[in-house]
Image (cartoon, rainbow, N blue to C red; front, side, top):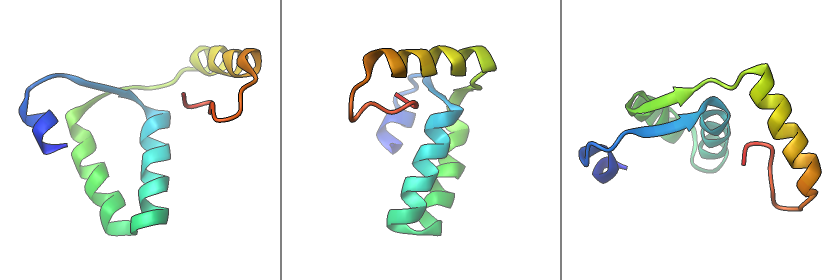
Length: 73
């Protein structure tokens, strides 16, 4: 992560990814890791999922009907 941030490339994600990542880190590595990630998240440009984004993602999720594909994907 430090290397990516140091490269100066813009980092883009959406809030669902942040939520999923924090939950995974908290569950597997504990609160210190989750907090550290949230601190580093200030380096991301965050796209906040709108109701329209969510509806489109849900439709694609239904359309593809694949195990292993999450709504966040």
